[in-house]
Image (tube, rainbow, N blue to C red; front, side, top):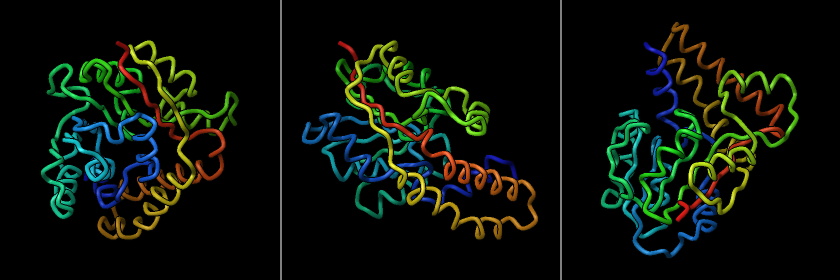
Amino acid sequence: MEELSLLVDLHKHQQRQGPGSEEVTARAVELAGLRGAGALRIVDIGCGTGAASLQLAKMQDASITAVDLLPDFIEVLRDNAAREGLSGSIKALVGSMDKLPFADGEFDVVWSEGAVYNIGFAEGVRQWRRLLRPGGILLVSEISWLSLERPGAVQRYWDAAYPEIATQAEKTEQLENSGYEVIDTFTLPEACWMENYYLPLLESFDDFLARHPGDSQAAALVEAEKTEIELYRQYSDFYSYCMYIARVRR
């Protein structure tokens, strides 16, 4: 089985495909001034199986367009939305985040949790700006350095895995250079990583390997995930996901 198919099979059974929480989503909504803002047009880019989309549909008077490249994730989201009676609020589409078929200014809010790394933060926020009406709001979580100095092991790992990792100040500057004014930023707490993402993933490894007996690629994928989890356990003081909240500059 190809590596992408294995990744999908490992992650589609999880509530989240990256660090996050309902508390983080709610806090971002409040800081962005979206609570009680009336009917909103929201696009959730790189939605995964839709944890954020589902919560936003419950919290807001909104029509949500949820987009992900992977059909399996979209199928899970559609099933979950139907089960929770939210199909009328969420339109789930298969699509690439760098080739979005939407008109300029079509949305009030662009939302993306833990996904922009697929095309890079600077490129993502630059491309997605056109989707927002004047004064529209961007909310993006992105892995960021929390310290100007890091141990060599963690520096080397993330330089190889995601060369665009940078400090919050550098990410803020990238937003400003792309035509946004930054409203606020905050760091996701450890529970978003361990309790909501890594521990459920760890608990799924045995079942995953049982579905792919003797598959060396599946075994290698599990080992790679374990390496990432152990890295976070050792070096969580030096990096995290941060939520960036910004408004299109008028």
